[in-house]
Image (spheres, helix red, strand yellow):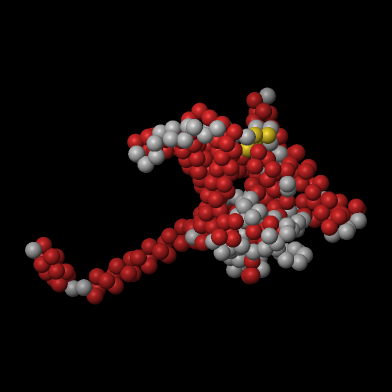
Length: 343
Ligand SMILES: [Zn+2]
Ligand SMILES: [Zn+2]
């Protein structure tokens, strides 16, 4: 019975409104996709349904790899999560640092009314979380060692809502740490400033802004339904088509749209790409940078191998550099220089 509970526990995200793949959100996303295809794209009801539930996409080799990674990573998370820093640890550390520093007075904004504090806190939690996701995501594309890991997510050649879980466990750990630090810092800062008035506006136990993000089709980001927003709105919120552009292998789409929910970060830092025309993107990795989209052994171990090779190459370069410097500097001269510098 215990084993059975653990097995069903692996799939608990489907019944948890705090998670993007909560079945309610997936159902709403399917309805939005249907409305988009029938009303905007003027497709027939039958062809719209066939497009949304396309077996060639939902049962592709890449999709099956996504499903297996989802289960494997859930098991891994069960083992690793007790070892990670908790939000309480970070929040306590930041809170103590704020108390010790005299930068802001303790309870300095205690006079602000409770509804305002709750609204500010709900917005701050969402915005800081989204901004740190943007930063980490951008680093994952720009730093070779992190790119080796993040490539696993971009290896998906077809996308479904489960693709959001197609990440290497090391990326999972990094994102979990990011969330703990970001949210822990906001919580402690707000408690320091506003005291016990701090609370969240929630719907079904979820920050109301996150809830709005999910019921407006967050799951369609990882899908083949290229819903676009008006151009001005795509400067504020990332549309499904914009995240699909992020996954596209077309050269003009490289390093664009790192944002999670908000597009403003991409707009501010010059990585925004608004959608144009009809999607029809090719997802995945190019031949030169890619490895298999389906072989689990490669998906899990190739990044580790690539990181090791990268580090060896770097250390060889450092050794060569040191050898060149030493060769150019006769030891006696170095000794004399050192003796002179002591005077
Ligand atoms: Zn990416
Ligand atoms: Zn993605």
